[in-house]
Length: 256
Image (cartoon, rainbow, N blue to C red):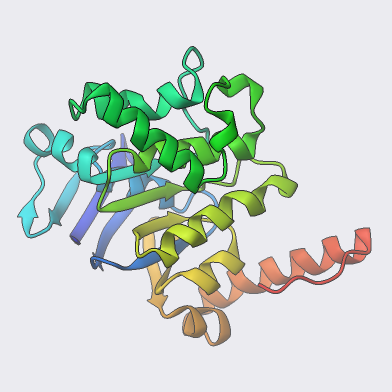
């Protein structure tokens, strides 16, 4: 679906993305991992033109993307789930999900409501249709945000660290919804710090650092036998950090 060539993104004199070249196929799940500040979220925002690249080319389904001509079409076909949910606080859960199908896709109200209720069922929130975002937990709000993205019936979903704003005990409910979507065949690109999810769900893992793609490969290869020293350092630090937490709080080990 995406072919990216020599993608660059600068903010003033600061280079955030440096000659990123990557292919993302239809039906594929790609997880992007790496330390904070490595350019992962900026890369994701460039894919759907929320950020305008400084250089390079992005092809979507064989067509070169143009900021003015293609952004609306792209966002109909490539949904995005953000870190902070971004729900409309003045709308109920149901109306949050219905808004884009009615106002952008011009779907009939009745059809949009039927779609929204079916999506709430899918994310396990059928009984919260009339609630407002402020009445929901963070995990529930993020599940509504996923349902809202699905309401546009996208061909692909982009997830920008969807669990980073959640309390640890709420992370699992969001990841479970994402796993279900993947098992249903949804194409997705996920920026994440959840290494277990990346290992279990992705077809490919991309490791980024300092604006570069350092390494990419199958999850088993990246996590079990990374080829680049920087990848090894990153994963070793994560494992060490988990062991410190487990020892300090007497927690049982959980697999990466």
